[in-house]
Length: 407
Image (cartoon, rainbow, N blue to C red; front, top):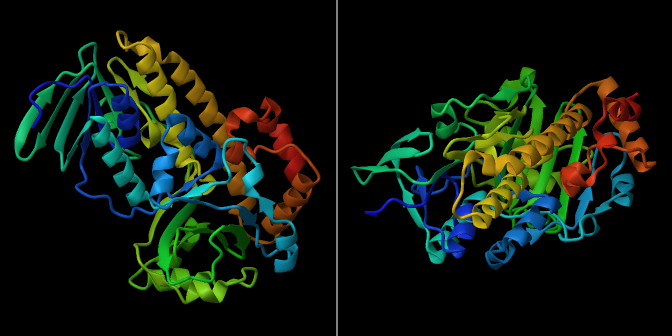
């Protein structure tokens, strides 16, 4: 056990931030409740603007070394058009962002282990199996916890809360959280023995009462996601829910549906409500929240890891630019950028859900209209989810822009 108080204590999955800081000789410790990283059905798809963040942080090659791969094509297999028509309009994902040859796929437990190992190699300490964490904010922040049945108390210069959606740091310190109304459930499962699925192809579409996503995960693995209405929550409940999910992917619009249905579940099926949650100001004296602890976007848009990586970059740049300061006001630029970033991504996520995950005859017609108008060059907030929200004009996020697409 360490006998001296570190400069920075990161609570939760802070391997990426710890790596960046430790490489610059900042004394940092990560406190992690987990002793290993289970499959929680999240965080395995990094959109191009997130890949760019990885590159800027100097972390991208680490993931390549451990099997991360890019999807190069997106095909929207959908009930509104034939498979052949969908394939004619495949999107080349390699040309969307100048710093990313497409989205990146890698298993979340693997990524956590990669960043923890990198952090330790860079000189950070990572304590796993930590219990009873208590945080107090202030000019001299305080953290206590149990590790190996020993109570430890520290007064670091800064506490970083990176402990996810149900953040203990956020709750203990009284951060106010805002949220949209719940509207859908999003669930997923890792499936093996699907060798026929192309390793460079991702597919997204809607049929009847299911919005689906398929992402390859190396070898013969695919990650399946299903977004469905709360009213259908029993559809994927019970002891046979994994088999039900495989059966649900036997859609008329989806080629290789039989290959998916014949696959073997190798992970849990978990589902979550997919509304946005956000903290307007994720800082307090002596404390900064990052990632899901500071609020998360509707996961149907796949922004979670990219949001976290941008947080890591902005916070690390502030910490490294002024090693003597680290007052709450030093993080004003992070607060302002994140506030506008999340506002834009909320709009894009709400629109994505409206178009893709509302069901019935009228919703199907609206989806067809929006797809046609987007193809004709109408301005839309959706590209923000791939390119980054700052790369679109402010007009893309106005209500009248969305009205023109859907009317």
